[in-house]
Length: 170
Image (cartoon, rainbow, N blue to C red; front, top):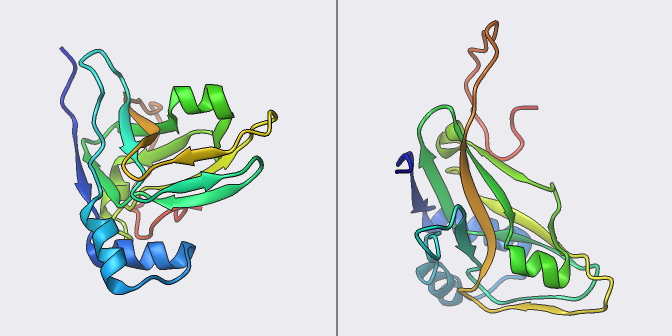
């Protein structure tokens, strides 16, 4: 049986609104609240699935070569020595060459406690060389996260603690 090591949560409305407005044109407060209310926590499609599907909280249309930063509204709490690795959903990668711009998203266990509440973002690109337009409806899976245990070297003596959000350790 697989180990139970984590729990998904929504970020606060304040954090989601700030991230949303940083990426998209301003919307009315009520529209942003509705998007936030509809955020679905990641889940596996079947008991044999390794990946937890992340669902876009709003519709996305990506023409070939286009990129968008998606504030998922999700954060994850997990045990130490585990990481959540994020990849495009397999079907979207196969059909549209959907790419995560950092290739594989790495969500560390201490990211949950960062200044931005551990808000998970995905910057995605439609890398289609077949001129296919990618349309993802609100609530549709677009990315998957897989929990992986990791080890450290015998001489590792790191004691620093994260104090910032995304990309804050360097």
